[in-house]
Amino acid sequence: MITNIISAIGNNRSVYPLILRDCGIEVPSKIYITRKENLKESKTKANDATREKFIDEYATSAVWLGGIPLVEKIYDKFIKSKGFNPNTDIKLFKEEKYQGINYNIDKFKNLASEEIKDLEKLKNNRKLIEKLTAGKFAAATLIPIAIMGFALPKLNFALTKKIKDNRKNNAESSVSQPSMTAFTSGKNVSFTGNWVSAIANLKTVDKMAITDGGLTVGRVSTSRNRDEAYVNAFRMIGSMILNFVTPIYIAKFLDKCANKTFGLNVNLDPLIMGDKNLIQAIKENNIELPKTSEAKDLFEFIDSKPQSLFSQMASKQGKVVYLKNGIRDPRKYVDIKDLGNFRNEFESFVKSAQKSSDITKFVKKAKFVKGFNILSNVLISSALLAIALPKLQYGFNKLITGSYSDPGLRE
Image 1 (spheres, one colour):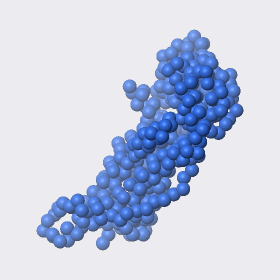
Image 2 (image 1 turned 60 degrees about the horizontal axis):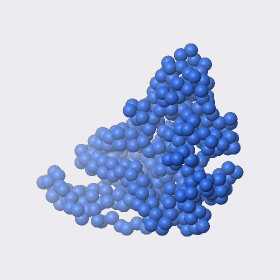
Image 3 (image 1 turned 135 degrees about the vertical axis):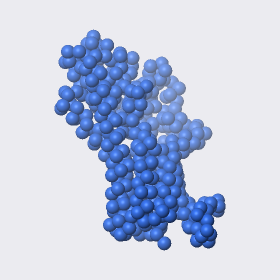
Image 4 (image 1 turned 180 degrees about the vertical axis):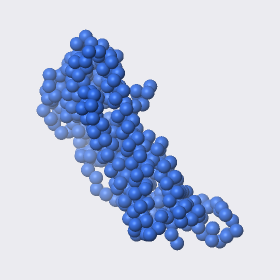
C-alpha cells in the first residue's frame, strides 16, 4: 500500500504529485502566509485577503485538477454517440516503420477483429475524427481556463466589493453576509483560440500545464489594477515553473546522487523494484529482455512474448496495452522512445542487482532510497511552492507598491 502511494506521487508525468503538493501542502501554506503578510497592514485587509485566497486557491484547485478529466469524460460520450471509439489513438495516422493505422490493420486483422473495426472506421473518417479530437482538447483546456482565469476572479472580486460596500453602509456591523447577487456581477468573457489536433494526445498533466498558461493570462488580464497584474504574473509564472519543471530536475538530481553515493540504479518505479517475481527472476538469472532498444526488437519482443516479465512490467507502467487475450491492442500507439528507455533502465537495474552479494538486500536498499528520493522531491518542491514562492511574491509586492497588502485590496 505504501509502495503504491510512493509510486504514484513519484510519477512526475501524472497528476498525483500535483494533488499532494497543491491541496495538501501548498494551498494551506499560501493562505497562512497571505494572512500573515496582510496583517502587517490591517486586520480588515487580512480578513479580505484570506477570504479571497481561500476561495481562489481551493476553487481553482478543484477545477484545475478535476476539470480536464471531467470535460474529457463528457466529450468521450459525445464521440461515442458519433460511432467512434474515443480510446483509439490518432497518433497512428502517422505511419511509422513498425506501427500505424495501415500497418496495424494488416498485422492484427486476424488477431483482433473487433479492434480492427475501430481502426478501419477511424481510417475512413480521418478528417471528422481529427476535428472531434481537436474539439475534445479545446473543450478540456478552454473551459477550465475560462472558469479559473476569468469567471472565478471576477466572482471573487465581486464578493469582496459587496462586502466592502456593506461594511461602509453598515459601520456598526463587524461582519456582513453578502447576498448571492454578488456572484452575478461579473462581466461575460469571450475566449477564442485556434487549436490543432496534433497536440490532442498530450497526457492530462501536460494539458494542465497548458491550462496553467491560460490561467496566467486570465489572472493577469482580470487584475483590478496594474500592480496586482504584475504580482499575479510573478506568482503564476513562478508556480508554473515550480509545478512542471523543477520536480523533474530534482528527481534526476536525487537519483544521480544515489547512483554516485551508493552505487544504486534507482531510476525504475519502486513498484517494479519490489516485485517478487522480478526478484526471483534475478536470483535465477532468468530475465528476458528485447535484444536492443530499437523499434524492431522492441515490437518483436512485446508481441511475441506478452507474458514475459518485461512485457508485463511495461504494461503495468502503461507503456504497452494488451487485450484480455494477450494480444497487444492495435488501437494504442506505442511510444517507442519511452519503451526503449524503460528497457535500458530495466536492464541496468537487473545487472546492478546481479552484481550484489545479496540480491534481496540490494533490492530493499534500492527501493528505500528511491522512496526517500520521491518523498524528498515532494518536500523540496512543496517548500518552494508553499513557502519560498509566496515569500518572494510578497517581497516583490513590497518592492513595487511599498506595501505588504495585496494590491487589489487597496482603496
